[in-house]
Image (cartoon, rainbow, N blue to C red; front, side):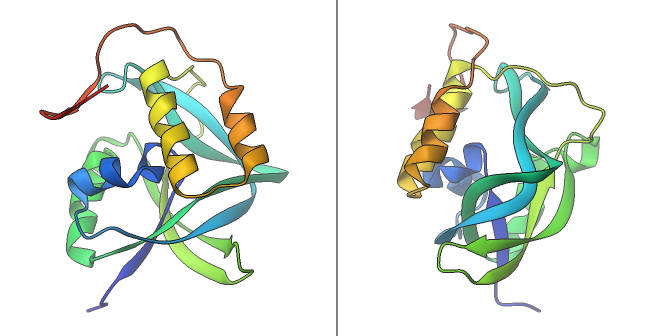
Length: 165
């Protein structure tokens, strides 16, 4: 069995505290770029009160994210979090380029292509932005994230008993 697995997070799982709710072994490895994909928000998450981050093929575009090293025993929890069993997200293997120029084969999750685009809640977008800052994603990319319009949801989003947005 593998000692660790590499996972590429680009949405709320950019934020270490959020990822470690279900993947306590998660360790930040590096920031990385996924080429020829774009970041979109799609679907309607009852948990997050709006669309959630996904990736879609888009030649010439790129998505920045974090490569996390995970203990394989945490992957079933991550699969559950991402709704694999319900078809909310699909697991896929992609190759990303680290900020140092190394290729890394990673797993990530994407919503099915037919899921319609939908604005994220301000709370979800805030977690994405906080994670992008924590991971040191390029400032220009963070500025692009800051321009994303949210859906205006004004209630609370409860991640855990002591982590309420």
